[in-house]
Figure 1: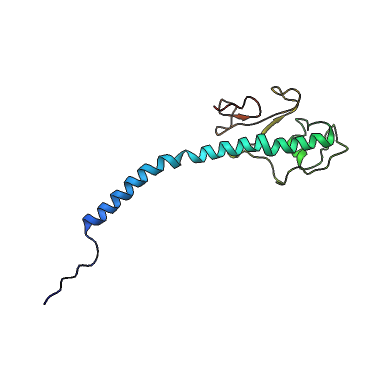
Figure 2: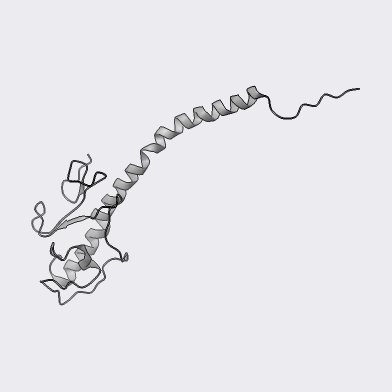
Length: 145
């Protein structure tokens, strides 16, 4: 009695598995592709509306003013040496001890007093293109674009 055992896969079976994997990948990749840019926008918005604004408000509570444009966001980490030098500086006001970069690697833009928020400050990210344009994320007019 001869037993005919077959081991392994045929070329058709392997091709069928490759096609199924290709179809699944074609359905998933478009859903995942746009998520990294969306995550960067959310991170920048969180920095502007929560992290940095809270630190700036703490600075204001201690010193009775926001850092000037010249002092910049570095005033949240080290006591400013440019005028007006705050007497009641109790920083650092942030846990991060590095230069402020948005998720695209550009510096956040800080202006005080602001041109849009004249009583406080303007804080923005220049977005993915790194230039002032419609894709900027700001602390003024933050309706979804």
